[in-house]
Length: 266
Image 1 (cartoon, rainbow, N blue to C red):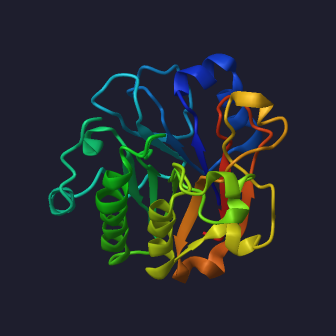
Image 2 (tube, rainbow, N blue to C red):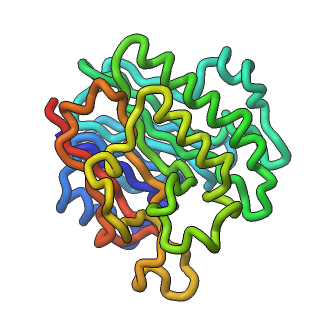
């Protein structure tokens, strides 16, 4: 099985460019997880008869949002967190809005595992959303994953808006303490590892440098491969034996992010 994740930065834009259709044709994912769809179901001209579609869109038009397209019909699909988790971590919102109403999480149950996609809140250039990210969102998301793991192992993916290690960005020293590479955000990722999950790409490619998934629009960064690895597939340790490959696809254009994928024995 081939599982893909892609922050499309606007599904309608990548469709209008023709890059989404070409990507589906070339890669034929069995499960495709999208972040930052910036649309509600029906607003994008998608014709994928082989796939079941599930959307979690933000209340705010043209903002955030996630989707899962799957060739297999899931047993069930959950949008967002359980109310108890949202209440426990006081995820009612900040000056930017309520992150539980921004369409940031979808969880789909299949026969042997859960697939979860997430668009993690950006801590912002001035770090004004770092506290929400560090003290509320990251622990809430981890608890959500742990709840799902009580029934089946989990594969989660998405734009986590953090480079975990220095090897995961082109200029680590200049970016220490800046959004996407703060101690707090990196600690949030450490908590996933401590909880019995693993970064599929880094586990299979421990020393691979220059492997990035996002590039700023400034200074021709993508052509020069001055980027960050902030898009991931993370899995329960008990799935290590079935993850056969983990890949980054920088040749797929259309967004400031590129897709990332894993291959598993289903």
